[in-house]
Amino acid sequence: MIWATAQGKINLYFQVGDLQPDGYHPVVSLYQALDLQERVGVEPGDVWEVRVVSELPNLQEIPLDESNLVVKAAKALAKFAGIEDPQPMRFEIQKQVPVAGGMAGGSADAAAALVALNEAWSLGLSQVELMKVGGTIGADVPFAILGGTALGSDTGIELAAHPAVVSQPIVLLINNKPLSTKSVFQEFDRLDLGEDLQIPNFETDTGWLGKNSLTEAAFSLLPELAELALKDFGCGPGLLSGSGPTLWYLAADDKEAEVCSENILAAGFQAVIAHPSSAGSRLI
Image (cartoon, rainbow, N blue to C red; front, side, top):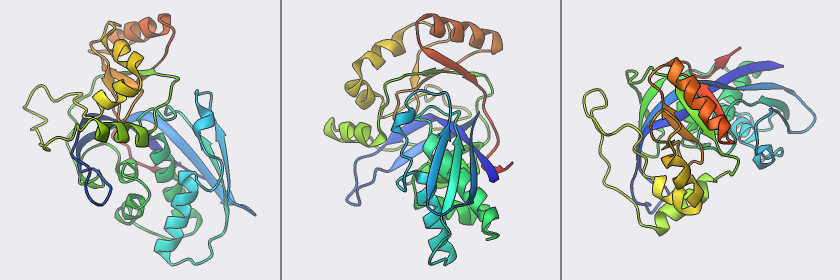
């Protein structure tokens, strides 16, 4: 197998505008990659096939047929490269990023798949070209290819690398009740929560960290998540990652992160300590 990896992410800032006639929402997002990796291996097969290896909860939410984003990525890449009848591939996905947790695990799978297939099919495409293909698959896929810290606009596919603004450890509270991105955006529209988009100066302004326009919609669909975000685990308030339901906490240092993690575990939830990463998708 040829293997590639891509990082999970959180949105340090995520502002969403009203639904547009094309069916998409404009956003302003400050993406931050984390040192949680999705590893994807590819090899030729007789049929399109997906296997997932992980101890994470909610694995049943992952499709193992051609609706999986890795297969969609392969077909989109073949179309971009002018391959009319692509060789079916077998994929193995080794997951570290929570499933349906608002951390773009599926998008990272697609990003890693694009990098691995670019090598397997000897296409020689550039990162920019792979990001263009990724944008046809999902709004978070181009960032999963780029990695690091980046400012996203449009639907999130217009990206510009940004200087890192956080370096502290991040504690993740993994909720076993998944939230689909589609359902959260539908609730966002029902509640009429669209905002006029603004881009803060992330290096000098205050009060922007953790702002997420989808928070009210996610809390509406999963009320216990709102109560959970207010609990004191020793590292500040819980902030919503993407469309949720994963909550993240910015710890002051590794010691505080360990205490916070232990408190989350003692409360009966799964906790993961992660760190900001400058990496994007790449061969391994």
